[in-house]
Amino acid sequence: MTYSKDLRKKVIEAFEGGMSQEEVSRVFKIGTGTIKRWRKIKKETGKLEPRKRSSESYDFLRKIPNSKLDEFKEFVLQNAEMTYQQIADQWQMSDSAVEDYLKKLKITRKKRLIAIKSDQKKKETNGKRK
Image (cartoon, rainbow, N blue to C red; front, top):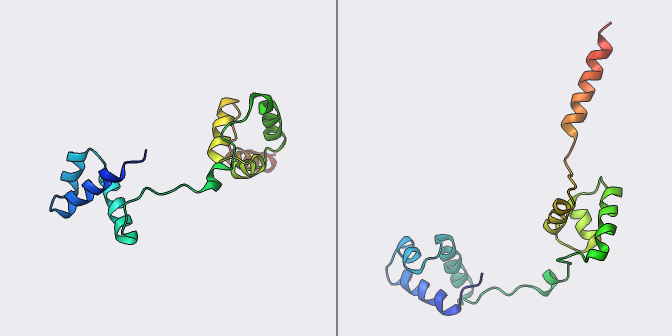
């Protein structure tokens, strides 16, 4: 959520006018972290403009069309060794979007390292017994 420039200005003025961060937070109903961030932005840039999002952040898919959902599922199943980031790069989407679609498709991608180690220990101990 982006707060208006006017609100940002009022918050900073209230703080600079002598109110504590906690008081400003209560009066304007915003978090102290937000106030800290705005103070830092003003100190660094001299402005209180909301940050512009880069156009690159919109170049990835947010949704997979239903027609491609089966193709996505097949790709994930065939490339089980790939990380979320690698899948995201292949499908031009964010890794969190990949995670969301895998949940939707009920595909779990748990690392099986503990299970593999456990099996190895069982084999080692079984081999030693005679």
